Image (cartoon, rainbow, N blue to C red; front, top):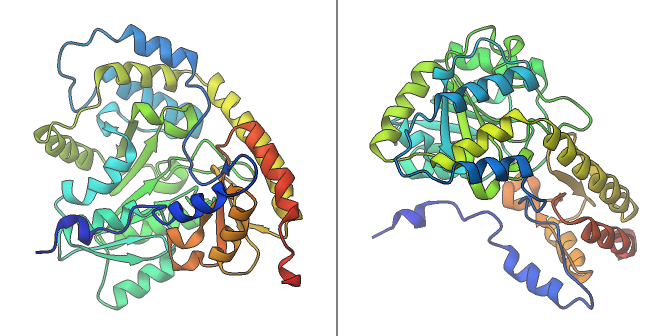
Length: 377
């Protein structure tokens, strides 16, 4: 009998064990630029809030505290110009990976449905489709959605991810508006994964919930947000989904039956994180400094940086198979992720994370220019 786990895509970065072993043979410390997990301190204002909420003997509500939902509404308005939201349109979740992987199931999608996600993508979108037996397809824009519809495969759900993991690409307002319009015309749910929205570098990412994108109504649209990246709270598992009120209410009803509740102390911590902009600015400054160290070193080593205008990664290529680039990096004690972990279209790219300590980033910058020149091999 085929088990459910056998039907699911391989977990991301499962290919890295051999690369890490190869890097470990280098005569010096290994610099791991593969994982986008925060390593900087959790803000003191958040830790104090968590401690203050530690006496939490009762069960939390699935819908979350009203003051947490109001904090989400206030933050989206203040930081990203999202207006017209009510706190009833907000649902806390236990980290956004859980929400992304389970959304199709919780909305009742199944084997008769088609779920579209970007060509280069976080694998959990495909995991969610596989979990319910739906058909997962790739689509990056309206033209590709039209082609799916013409082939009789109109999606029931379309995922967009801007800023993107792994590429750092940002969908501009026109592209987002076009996808919103297409989805509404085809009665398709649009879900925007916006976990890197606070980390724009060369452009300012925009939420799908902004008036200029969705036209003043959030019908048929959901946005997914996380505090893991902006606030170094990956271990707290604080996320939320917001948008179409009917869909948020349905999700809350289903998740209530499953006992999916963000713990009370974490809700208090999330309120503190959403109310404090200073730590976000401080963290952005850290990532910007690391980016300024790593990018020129990659270019000196013959890499071209593509996209990467936002997010926690540099998406780089030497116009050779990613496995070759990653192997040579490992021989210099540097671990990075081949783009094929995120789809076949990443076959010539490598993803470098900006989440290593400053000292490790400096080591990488020293070693990178010593990579063999690909033109001379």
